[in-house]
Image (cartoon, rainbow, N blue to C red; front, side):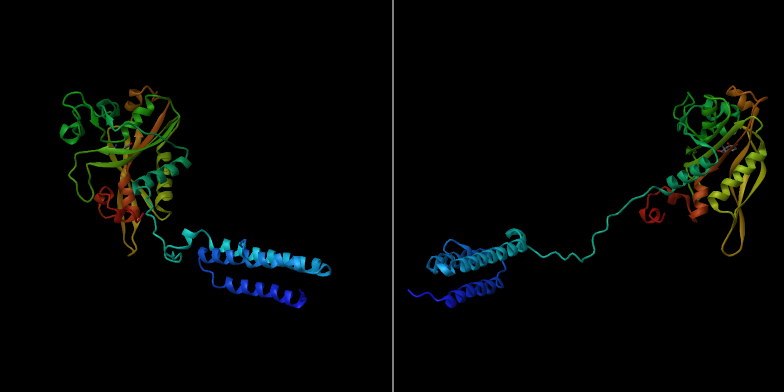
Length: 338
Ligand code: DAH
């Protein structure tokens, strides 16, 4: 049987072209499998043409051996490539995801504005060398009144004005953070420089500026030679650090059983319309010698000052909150502003 070199070349090229053309119609793994069987299967076209090599005359065997191997390699490579791009059969089906659609934004919570404020003011006092301390909210009269030089007949001790827990033992919710002064001083000797943020409780009628529970920041500094100048400087520095440099402070003479002399601190605010107003921040003064004696600190050797400021007042002033109840009602629309 005559063998025609050109015809054999032509046969190889036809298989090449037909396999290429068939590739274009492949959309599913099933299409690909059909194609693979047609060309690469045991009875496929590539196998068949390779079998024809035995009829190639000796002088052309090497040349066509190479050509046939190349054909097989190319078809095999095309198969691998398209197989990878098709992926797994199951994944190839199913709905098409639109990855350009906006995602669902997760709601991220944050600390309550009061907590943020407590952290911020603690930071400011921390930078001035104050330690942050805490005391219990359930107290006894010794710490809430007696050691603070508040005698039994004092109107502040009236049972109507405090949350007593029992009838007869004086256990109560603390009405002021000044209790923490006592708790710190009864356990250590000067130098003492602490601030104590925390909740206090008073049976007040609730309105826009009063609540039965609110927060105070207590400050206490006891050492040798501490004077009222230190108090005024420290309070002024704090107010400027928290509210801004334009705020001014003023000290008005006042009275507290645990300080002598005592003062009330007011802040001057400048409003956008040009007007100004003095706002009361809290009380302060030089620690009364009776208080130092009650906790075994020698008042001949040491002096100190203390203050107690309302934290809600600071928050309301700084963030223009018109009603204290907003701070306690957990309305997310209000809280998420901060
Ligand atoms: N404890 C006082 C109150 O609740 C505030 C206060 C005044 C605290 C003077 C002090 C102080 O430490 O020195 O009204």
